[in-house]
Image 1: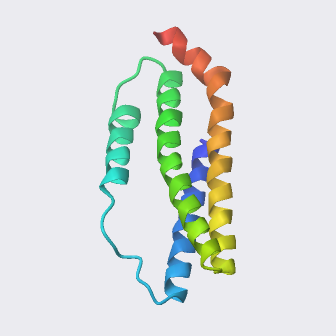
Image 2 (image 1 turned 90 degrees about the vertical axis):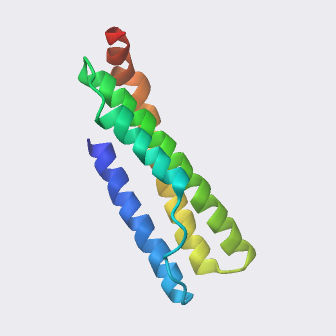
Length: 127
């Protein structure tokens, strides 16, 4: 739960960073709705939140799996934006975006470290 809360806080910081950068460039954060991310969220809700599991560890393993799919999407986005900012010599934007990228990588590594420990071991007993 601590890792998920940290991830949620990181998402909010990332949203704030994108809003700040957009505002400084007189751009809106409104744009086309991302159906890819929407699909990942729907899948996460269906397979990690709404599904019924025999063991809590199995649910935890699915939550970790779905979190990592979502965070990989964020890593790709922040990485691309940071590269664009660097190329355009928007140094302050690049620094902000790389901080978001680093935080996303940290969240991914945290979940990766949790998975092979007790969570996956206990979840496998269920099968």
